[in-house]
Image 1: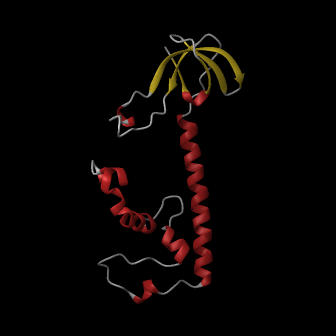
Image 2: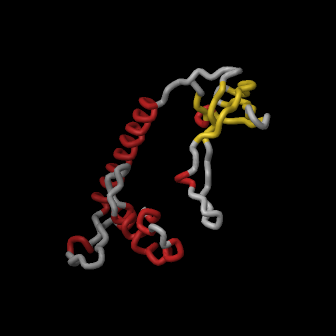
Image 3: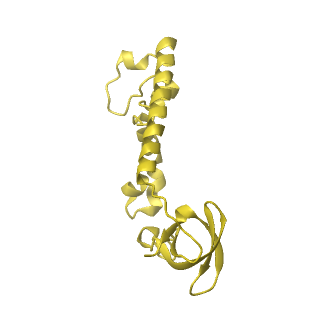
Length: 161
């Protein structure tokens, strides 16, 4: 959220941190069904320019707080199940074996001094040859060009077709 708002004004991002903290604390999260402010302060927080209502300022009774926490726990469990279903639906078992050529996922970091943006960097480095399988999910790779060896997790590999 912060990087979308800053848009080139990298030196003044810290001026807006309080507003972003307020936004994050007052936003209702999908995982819990409540905002962090409701869960920890037991009431909705009033934003700048909002009319203060006496019912909002009063803390909730202990029974409603307990039901809120129970509801939040249930919502979190349902969200975890939804996330697992989505992950499992998109996950494909790739049968990698010794001798396959694969691409290795890169994890580039932006560098302002070098004018390098990770968003514009290539996502995959190519090609690597699988030398051996060191565990069910880890492979020993060798760069085809430089002959450099490294170990990579199966989630970081993509089969070259």
